[in-house]
Length: 236
Image (cartoon, rainbow, N blue to C red; front, side, top):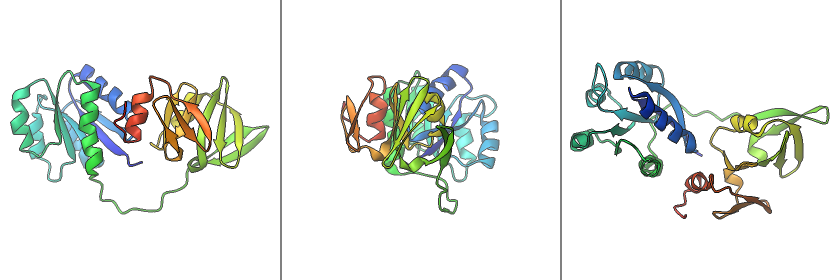
């Protein structure tokens, strides 16, 4: 799954926290950083490329739209502000969307899906073959190597987890939250308090369960929306 690196430029801590929480819930977004003002954001963008900027207009030192004027090749921009009167001016900068505070999650999803569907991406770095990610898990007093791209799903067994691939099933003592961090590249998604699944390995899905390699896995109601989003379905 294509990942879009995001930068939040926001001087209100609560508003920044809301955006951080929303980004964390969307599988194809990752947070690259948060800046309290545009000067700091200019320095950040000089050191690191991002694909999407969530930009407040009323910022200290340098206003959001003035900040955009300084960027020669800006990434995609979604404006976040409490002032609707700037919308027309904002679109003159080819802004992707304009979100009014307080931003609702459903409206946020609509905006970021525009980025996903357009395929917008700023990174022009030469591509190199991706290294296959793997990890050695403790199982039966041995270290078992598992490649992440072979994992079908992970099941919580209280203090243990079961990691299932097409060729084997490995039980190891590890919290589900810890392996969720290991599998945080956007290829996996939590669908239930007890299950993490590979998005690309899903054969059949509904709002109540997914099927992977013949195994039916329940979908928790709190995870339904993020699953449908990850699979590109508007079905509810």
